[in-house]
Length: 436
Image 1 (tube, rainbow, N blue to C red):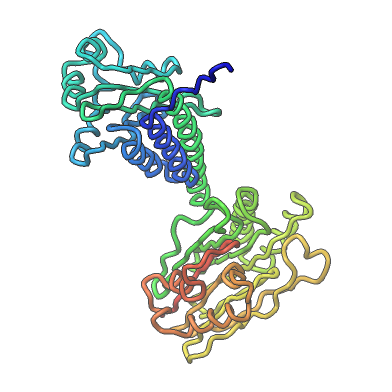
Image 2: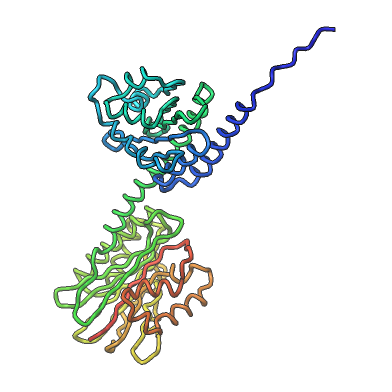
């Protein structure tokens, strides 16, 4: 019978190494899955790499101007982390006629594998005497440099893995394949996180532009406000508040809630807020301003509607005048211990007022010294799908002196009603305290 040749056994060290590489890919996948703050993410990847497959890990990225910089690093020996972080300085040195391996990998999009780093390599591939001294001090013995590539942004950086003298391992073609897989995952996650960060910055600018940059300053009145977008959206939403003063000392307030969330709702919100301002500056009549906004909404954006409330504070006559288009509030603590809801005629939302009667005139109430008024959007009430409970919490919060006299009463009210819970609707709160 023919002799069957048994395959040679796979060395345990190779199996152990493959196991560690697979561990790293799993660990990196967990880290990258939550990649929103990409700075923390890449630091975590470097830390995992030196724990499992490297003695030194360096991750370099390109900035918006195309310059490469060290974004994260880690060394197996924690005492050398500070030294490892100085590796970024050599990306900008060119005192020798050579190019940094990281810059070559980024420029060509090709990986670099150096199985055995010897004296000749250190002299010929260092960009300066200082760079050569750094690699000698770190005791470089084997290197893998792989570009980080994003499908949408191209090559965004490079990942460097280094084995040093204390390690008996050297990198090979299999190590290179694992490193390329890790780099692909990192490139995709970092690009995604950077895009989120960019979107976040744009949203921040947009939201600041859509809300007033300051509240009115009027002796005897204290204003405060807070805005929070839906937990499901990126910083922008359809709720708004606004407050501004007329030349005669009266102060206009508008609050509203556009149906929906996100950038589309925020765009409509901004237009309505500006439209109400323009209408009030032309004719400071709350009911008429809402009618103008309703016509604008029906003409320009059919099948869209929003709730809104317009108020006018007249300190000289001690009055608060309100008109509502389907919007709740405001609630008033009248100084005597009671929290009241004095403006009960809500009317139909903007965009729907042609289907039924709208209030012809605004309602007026006298405001006493010490009164406290809270304007809000319904996200404050609907966060837990239990409006009666939230309504009761809101009344209780307004009745508490420590809330009304808080440094930021709007935030104190939001905290009292909602706590730290997430919410799937935008929330806006504006408070006015009469100290006349």
